[in-house]
Length: 606
Image (cartoon, rainbow, N blue to C red):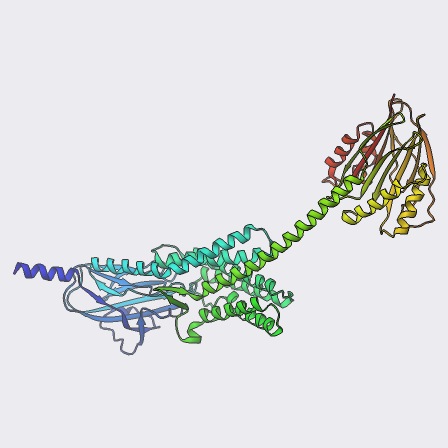
């Protein structure tokens, strides 16, 4: 007899009653619905677990079962039945979930309710007053149960099995989502403008599915407030994907294209409003960003296919748009759940994240290939610039010269790899020193070519006076039709201190010495070289005393500009004109270089 008693107790401890299947459902709301004697035969039939969550608002679910044996310690286990629920058993309140009818509901998850005093054998009526929040989108949280009346041990085992099964089924989606986040972060870190949009989409969309995947397979008290923030981020990600698709399809941005971000902004506002007042009379609709992005991309990609342009990306974007439309509106289109997936060796792999991962990988590969070509082109240009710089350096004469009782020093600091300034220090056959400083209009390779022409004409000179040398250079440049113009100064320094200068539009030189204050040498103006054959050049003469210094500078010194937009100017240049060429050039560069800087100093010994 005692053995039979223990056997009955053990059976009751392990007993359970499945609550899957048909329930009675009504959209009306009355406290009497919790009572067992309230009839429900005229209520609609609902199947639990849900194939798709019902519309927002309050509704009641009821089911009556018969227990063959008592349950001294009974636990009611419910799946993801609603955002929030009040549980009644035989007319008595057995428990509630947080936030019924408020904005503080928690994430969809299976729950258990311990029934005080257990349950006797016989009829048991379970009534659920449910509230579905308008804030939630339930598609990431499929209802797989369990629905049970069971002993504590069996209830715990059922919940553990559900969470383990959810973790196994969500594993492929989690892997895909993590891969998307990793790829998105990489693309963002590349810091390419055309890669940032697809990177932002991958991070936001993949990150959102990572969170959804975790919440679908682990108990969590996360509130709707955090989820709304996550949905806003996901909505921004769809806009980023839309812009990235326009780029990869090479579509011009028409004004109406910007309806997508405008519509998404309206959607975000409605989402926040529904969160602040979830019980309000808000219109239910799909995510507006998705509602507009998918059809629009489908049309645009189909148009590109029709035109025969960008067939690869157009076909992939078209396919991804179709999959996403079916996945998001699967109930209305196919009459089935909203998550499309394929079964591969026991793993349920969702098509939507898989499609977008493959599409994003392809788009990223295209961008990276484009980036590779651009880098190769940039490296080629850099190599050409290095060669041009080496050629230009070989063309320029030595930067120091001692001749006729003078010491000349030159410093050249190009603004780019190859500049347009030049200088030449020449020991003339008659014992004098010739100093030439010039500036070609423009910069880069074209300016360097003109410099080569100017220096070639100078080295093939037939005279040694400044005005005659400028005339020779002018004829050569005009005849070659080199383009642009050249400003230039030529100074002849004789052993007796006589300095003769002619200028073709170059800044006037400075004279500094111990006996008198530094000043600008008034030089007759002249037209730049290369404009006309009729240009005439006048000469001016100055006597340099022993220890005095002549300074020639390019406009890169005078026009150096600091952060306050102040120029280095003539006055500052004159004040430091007694210093070395290196010091003058360094001062102008430190002030703010925006053009080639050339400084030539000639000091008379003594």
